[in-house]
Length: 181
Image (tube, rainbow, N blue to C red; front, side, top):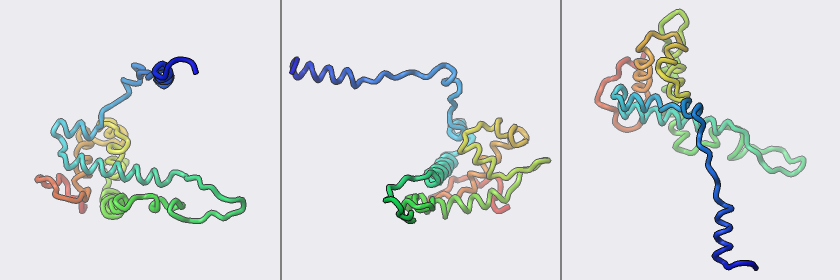
């Protein structure tokens, strides 16, 4: 063996170093802050709204994760059996995720999906609010995309998050618009 133990370790550590590449200026320009967080910091939304948005995002992530195909090792000719990693995306959710999906997210979707925006081409509130929360589009982009008047994006976002049945105490203010219709 050549060299001392210390020299061999130093040589091995040098091989393990990974050079990082910083993002290009174009990539940095495309990065944007979280729309909901930005409006919480400006005082337009409350911490309750942020908590509701984070739970909505986590449900979307859990459902998306559950819809992704899995691979299973099978013997030749063996039939695929439904099991914990089976075809149902609910089977891949943790108990807490399943509870949130059934008791928070689905009732909220039903309430917001029934409400429509004003205008010649009405769209459901659910579409607008999830585009802002999950896709992180700005309020102006949402207003332009869905044909809303200026200021309606924030009103719909706030009203939609007010309707979210988050566990625990709600914030002190009353919802801007009733969730019941």
